[in-house]
Length: 70
Image 1 (cartoon, helix red, strand yellow):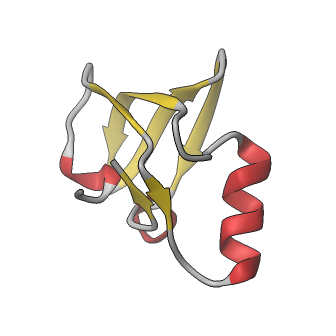
Image 2 (spheres, one colour; image 1 turned 30 degrees about the horizontal axis):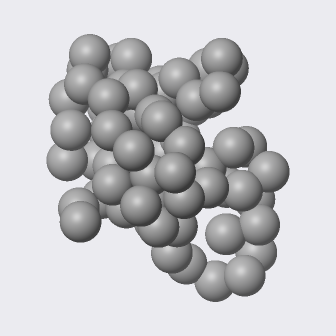
């Protein structure tokens, strides 16, 4: 497993686990980041990621993205 920040634009992966405290896991879960979900990195801008998850585009800063393990 590695954090979502380790893959580049155009790559996709399956979410294996979401870490962090309860509030962080709940926030990311509400956005669709749950184990088994497919996520695609669309772009990386200054450390922030724009990803596609469940037919939605979501922007994540690097601190949030590091809690998503693929």
